[in-house]
Image 1 (cartoon, rainbow, N blue to C red):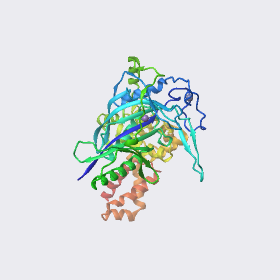
Image 2 (image 1 turned 135 degrees about the horizontal axis):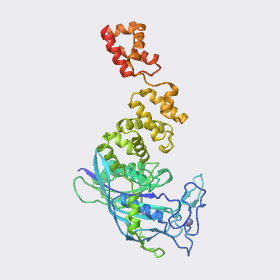
Image 3 (image 1 turned 120 degrees about the horizontal axis):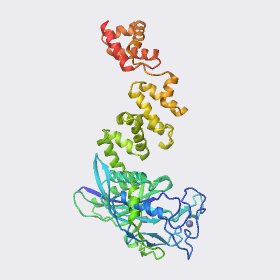
Image 4 (image 1 turned 180 degrees about the vertical axis):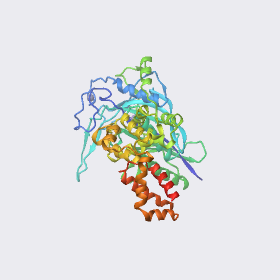
Length: 479
Ligand code: ZN
Ligand code: MN
């Protein structure tokens, strides 16, 4: 019998706010331990939380981008548990009335689009961090509460995914949406984006749900993929040998690439949720809803479709340009200055992205502003400079900050597309290379290549190579 996995994902994303969810402490990453704390986020008795409205609006923006139904009046709940990095002994979260419910996210899969259901989207606070001493013989841990109270978005999917590839596509698309909407910086190395997975197996083609295993401690997409692959194998072999899969929670061991049992169903925690008495319900007013709705940008999938349908770009080009919002924005700004989508797309994909990737700079740091790149592409499209010269000019634009037209003039590299001007050079090259010419006349047509090269060399790369090629062939064929 064949089995197929049924996969659901829970994603936690730190929201892109300056300050924490219930106090004014900074959320900046990487500062000295416990330097960004106050009585509220330290969980002192008698303190009161005050909602960070920016965080609430970011969560609302995410709920809208994920096509959720909104609970227009929503409230917070206490999730009670004890852990050293949680000084209050409860996490303020949402359980009974999530901000967003019943949404979906469209993901690209196998050249098609699949819809993954979103059960709920809610707002909660992050815990601190336990730092376990790792030197030999160490028997203690330290607690850093800088992260305690950082606003978190939690996104819970329906058990809708049936392969590791599908889960992977979901994670990538969700990350793209959170970046496009500027809800989170999604820096996985800083813990801004974390996952938990639930997975069960069932006979392929059936509808039932098997015993579910939850996997925690997944701090990267690679970890999710690895854990799912490993768990699919483990559960499948259990089922094939007639054993049952236990409903339990397992932890991913990144180093040994395996999951280990953390707790079984019987040991499952009861969080004794109850409504948070220190916070009032929050109402999403019409004014707030309209403002936040207007702040949701065009999302990557829609943008990709528009680039294909309205601008005639290939699926590949559109996908590359829409991967990061900044690249798509740069492309559109170029397009506003020079309305040639295909040639601008080629330039950005082949030259600009190579340049920024090689030097590991971000699109915002790229030195050539879009209007200037558009001008360079226009000069190339109009045949005023050839492609090789244009690449050289771009390098000089980066280095000097000058514009393309100025550099073309200074360097004297304008393309020679005038047949009359090329004529004497071509004749000279034919005279000076009798062996190659004989080769060509003897039937080896590709011998024209080195002759074109000679003409390019004599014109210092300025000749229009297409025209040179054509003129050379005509002349040789008449010999
Ligand atoms: Zn604080
Ligand atoms: Mn959570």
